[in-house]
Image (cartoon, rainbow, N blue to C red; front, side):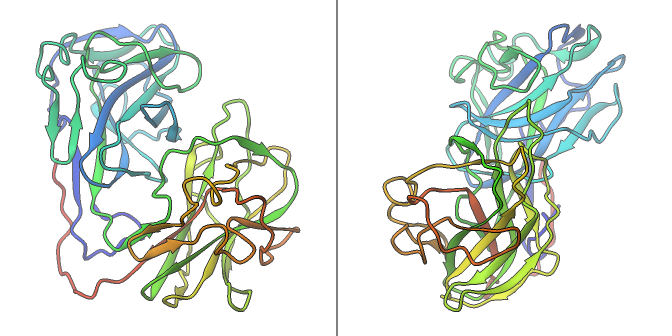
Length: 379
């Protein structure tokens, strides 16, 4: 499979933990009488996109998970989604894709989570000793994916937490496996973002004013601006709003280069969401630009804000990813993550203490080598 916005000539490989056997080990039973979240912990050995989650639904199942997500093991939500399952109840392995696949960082421990609604006939297959004395007793590795055993997982493997909303599970099910699987794809060659869609732990702000908000960046080679990412924080009780316009400004001339009405590949509150440009602009090397969004100013206009990020926080020395870089607050025109009040896109030049609003450009830098490789899958 080839991810949207990626060069189709790049070799893509896909990995899962279990390889989805036709009939996984364990016994079929009823569960889920208590609404809650179930998880499996894993890591990747190289940066990879998380495509989505697999789940085994045995015959006689009456309901499928109603929410899926990825947390880091500190409890920060990376992404969540209301799943559209690729198969029917009781049909075996079914898949739910993330509409805005997050980029996972090498060496970071993550938990893939499903939320199960109240239903006394939620059927699943459970291998009760898989992670403690069974096939996963020493952990498992599948390509770039690794899952620890029950003893070394942060909260135990196939952990559980009760609750009506998806949450980071912290209670161990004593090493049981309910056959939840994660699918990741590599590489993300030639495509770069500043923040790499890392988990965001930042205060949330509900500001009903209308602003153009932007972040300054430059690329050392000629590039295409594929998309803009935005972090929409998670509030189960809120139906928030996403930015209503996206664009890019040339900093030198303070001129609007390109703008569009976005279609966000994710819902409000789902973490990192992505808006692809339908006509991606081609931009110049070593020229400073600002990726911008226009927030609507509605009553539930939640966004994450981390003050002093670019002055004394992680961005104090600037950030870079391959040929893409972002200056610190002192180097930006008006500071980093600037804003401009108003109901339409305007060049943002006012800074608020070097804060970070988690706006991220996605750029594609063409390779100098033409690769005529076929896309493939490895499971």
